[in-house]
Amino acid sequence: MASQKITTFLWFNTEAEDAAKFYVSVFGGDSHVVSVDRMGDAVMSVSFELGGQRYVALNGNTKQTFNDSISLMIACEDQPEVDLFWDKLLAGGGKPTQCGWLKDKFGVSWQVVPNGLMKTLQDKDPVKAGRVFQAFRAMQKIDLAALERARAGTS
Figure 1 (cartoon, rainbow, N blue to C red):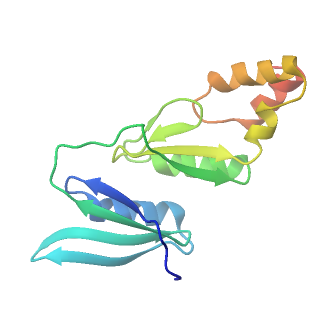
Figure 2: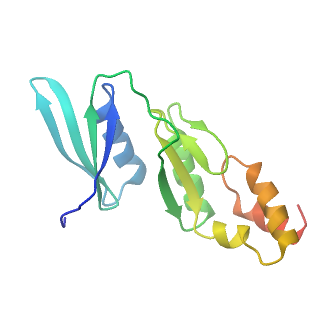
């Protein structure tokens, strides 16, 4: 992999290796654990790649928790891809929130967003755009077909 200037660093209490393995299983393909750094039997950090992007998970043994002030966004090609990532990231105890956001079982916030979302939300007709926005705000997982029905006024 070419040198990556900025790497997302995720600080866990003791779940770094479990989290890295979980994310690799969610994204598959060219996603993999790169290295596991240990101090004796304890895992200190895990480097992993998701879709060619490097991440590091650290076991910080801290009371710090993740919050919504930062999230990871997945740009999905279509509704089946939205459904796939949504379901996988919620597996094992994740929690859906609103407007395509969820927290996985480790408390990390994700946005699962179809590529066509902004086009749908920014319709040139303000009445259509308003209907779409109202439908969008009521959603947890984004449903493109429901947004299209709202735009057409048939929902």
